[in-house]
Image 1: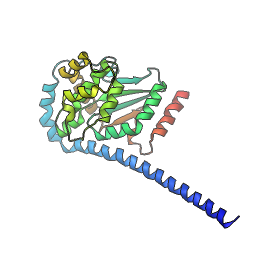
Image 2: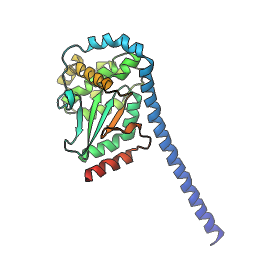
Image 3: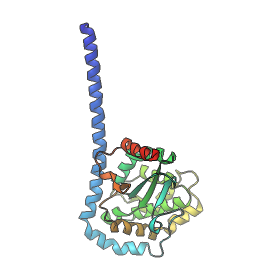
Amino acid sequence: MSEKNRDGKRTARERLAVEREKQKAAEKRRRALIVGASVVCVLGLAAVIGVVAANSGKHKASSAGPAVAPSGAQGKDGLAIPVGKDGAKSTLTVWEDFRCPACQAFEVAYRPTLHELTDAGKLRVEYHLVRLIDGNLGGSGSLRAANAAACAQDAGKFRAFHDVLYANQPKETDDAFASNDKLIELAGKVKGLDTPAFRKCVQDGTHDSWVDRSNQAFRSGGFTGTPTVLLGGKNIYQDQTMTPAKLKQLVEAADRG
């Protein structure tokens, strides 16, 4: 073999090695983003017990009245908003807060895979909406956004609006979602959602008490932070080896039986 050919093969191997290192670094950054954001949400809960207590009266006042579940809500007390086929062999349970940066990080990483699997009828996702950040940092953006998402469920447009909320999530300390006008403005990004019925639902806080009931179920469940993502009862969000590709393999294997 000529020296030139040896050099060419060596260069190709070096390029491949460099590319592999780049991929490893990108995966490491992705994991750091998700884990780091999760720590913010979890530590906030532990650090501000006093804030939670101080705001508990406000929570009750803001969502007084009977809990009105959104259309199509299922599960115990009608607290789960389902996305995907009822007969799917795998169910993913997601507890989330629209103000939580870790929830957004999870969405960015997993959304394409979740959409693919639910659209194919292989996975059913059950969303539970909570207001963890409202308790941690004060404000009502988690509640207002969750109520608006429930209103979108009434209109049959939950998934689209859910994705819009995360795509436009403000900084954790910015309670921008507390504005109903802001939420209605974002609804304009979902075709056919901004209707008089949707606006009334958002402005009236129709599902506020339902959101609070979901939040109470989250706390009663002993969960430590958002997002909490369960597949077959196992918290896959805490599994450091989990990736969108691995989740897809698990779901497709279950679908094949």
